[in-house]
Length: 284
DNA sequence: AAACCGAACAACCGCGGACAT
DNA sequence: AATGTCCGCGGTTGTTCGGTT
Image (cartoon, rainbow, N blue to C red; front, side, top):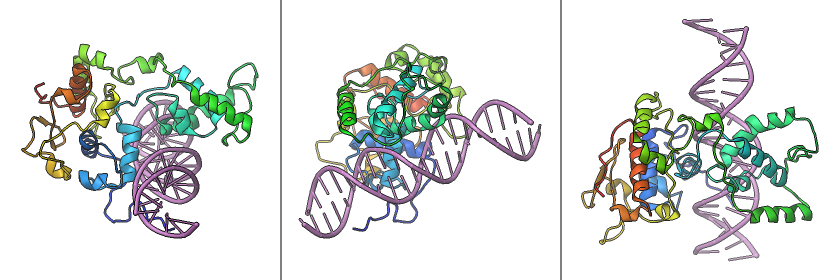
């Protein structure tokens, strides 16, 4: 069979994403989910291929991504998991909540390989056993892997100095609630030419329950809205929220957001203040 | 101050598997 | 069973940034 090129149509944009594109993608997925990546960019009005959208979302924009430096525990876990799983980054990422396969892959190539190279091959250390880059192939290894797959995802507190700083850690809902001023300060003072505040990456959202992202946030009795471009800014919606990068997005009140109103409020607050602008928060 | 260089990381590419028709 | 489409994965590349000379 012949595979159609990902971006067969000319004019599709490549390269770094702009804040405006991010905003459109985030807003679209919040409203409609991402059932069909291929169709998504067209419906959302993005000049990107679906693949690019998926990558951007999964590696950068997803709300549950933990930004910031890897803790020592996380690094050790990556090393151990890599020892067992090989270069199966997605499998490793599945054991490290909030970390993406791409991020883990980068950390491995930039930090951990070097760290391992420096370490003496001492069998007493968990990372010193013989490594492989290929996935396990024999039955013992696969049964071992099956055990790994039964493990619960690991949770690591961010405890190293860098991740403790405001510049690197993700902002929890609780922190947002109690210290909004720091968020404002970061957004105001750390902007660079990219349009993103340095300290406030798009990944710094409060964690949401799964329902938040699986639910369609906005519903209308009269039926579906298929044209996102028309939907944003539409006048048929209940509430309006001014999003810094243009589109006007509206949504239902708080019950659609998840279980915690404060989380939701903080989410939007963080979202909007990324552009250094105070939002017009919806009235919940 | 400018040039250079390496590290870090975001993004792209191509392949293969899963699923639908 | 064959074919087509979509998605996810791993490898790789390109760009940016910070440190050094």
